[in-house]
Image (cartoon, rainbow, N blue to C red; front, side, top):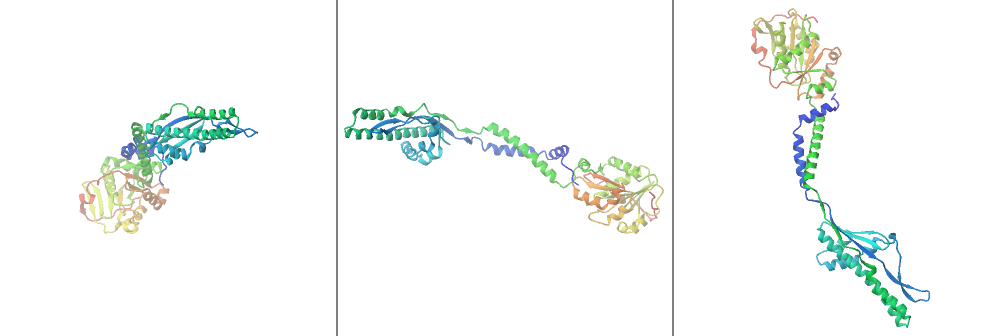
Length: 430
């Protein structure tokens, strides 16, 4: 029964709950601003190292000689250059609390070509700190690599010399050992990039936009979950023709009176039953509708559980017709017997979903006015009412009204009426 969400209904949901938009915008913006200054990336230092290793190789005669291998970028791996021993040496040299585990966790490696590598270090420290940590590691790496290769070359030279080997070969090994710093050394200066933080202005703008979107989403969700009927537009979207009325304003009921006259209550008269799903707000509408018929010059009778009032030249007159008139069909027909020519009887029926006896009033009705309370009646109430009044709906004798009134439509007709003896009312012909 509830209508689908259209652009118009979505707009109505948002407009009805407009306060959610600024509220959510403020809340999300405040939450976003708490992230201002937080790092989205760490400070990073980068250094290049030239690595051209020289080791000892042996000729087929068994004579040692220096050998410089030619590598490709694929030959250089991270495990070879991100070394726990080098990390421990660098941490010890800094003496500022840096640990070898920090190095192993934060060091980056990339092989640029067969002789050059790039090492990087990044953490949440400042640019100067990460540069100092990387420089200490590069220094330790170069030192360790040179010492290791130099030890091999000099050991081979000393062994060859002690065995009376070729002096030229010994000199070559010693020269290679002394030239190692030319093959293994930092290549250029260390570069740093500062940590990036979330800008406050962008966070504020993004928070406001996200809050507005969140507010719209919440407004739509609440609107779709709301079981209450809010407007005649919602009713039309659900395929129900309806009329908005305010019982406290007689002019707004004139359209309903005209609709009832052309829709069934013709010049011969008839019975109009005003019935509600729940509550007693139908009394205001029925009284105003009866007054409207009386002002138009039609003989009018207003009938409710509390009594009967009949219009006349001197105003309204109360008629004693007994009790529980609306509780059974025979009693109601007796009360309606002997109406005046062209008379309109307006029945204020009990709430149908609370008092099933309200169906009795609709059984004699020429037109049944189903009065819904704006923001009070629900879609399930409407669906249940239409099911109970199915025969009248099929025959076109039901009119749906949305009561937009906020207060009662003046004093009861009985309080305004003078008391007279009851006289029969002839049942109207339709």
